[in-house]
Length: 370
Picture (cartoon, rainbow, N blue to C red):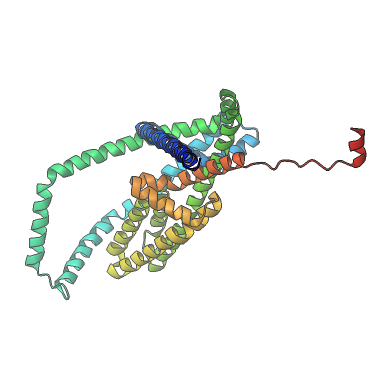
């Protein structure tokens, strides 16, 4: 009996292990297929994601107007036009001051290059004019040898810019329709789904919408903190274009990693050509300090409170997303983590065993009557 029983137990354990392994393989296969389909559909999904993020930013004024008896189409049209005016005005507010000082900046760039060359000629580098010319000729030769690759990269860049413009226009149209018909979407979705899905899917969609709104608001708050701190530093140093640079810092805060690098690079270069190398180094130190505070303190704290995620989870999500999918991964890492948390919390609520009501003890008289 002993060996036979042990043999049956071993076969049962093997069957259970094989069943679990097969289920895990099926889950992994389904995950791979889902990711593959998402990759194929990404050119369509990307404008939808951008439109949803913009809608969470512009929905509060639309909701206010609709509560005051405005027709949905009129409210959505007005807010969409105001959003375009603000976006275009922001770009103009950055470009016009820079364009007005373009001649002065060009002269200061030439002077800055001459100053840099004089500094390089002294200790500790001691680079002579002949050496500088030799380095310049070498750089020109390498540039000429790379004309073909540069042209290809330029064409690819132009194509990317064109695709980005098309996606932006499509996202704006989708934003308008989301603003106009958004409140009718969940009831419509509930009518299309069978059984319990008619309740579960709209509930998860509603919570996901709230999570996206919290993400956009927290990102705007973090961008505002960066813009104020860096703008104060530029103003104290007497940089002429401190206000456009602060606005640029706020706008680029919505593009993680690359946005901060671009805004910081522009601020350092303009400070260098207008105020000199010392102030440029001070601005660089300010930007690095602010970015460190943003990445390690402000962003995790603000987003963790708004999204219900731990600050460490936010930091790890951004790190993982940027390492796997670059800029797009960094941009979508936190909202994707928030949506996964929403889905997990809902499933946990539904799967949690509800306490079974315990019947009250019956009295002796009632037992006798039965």
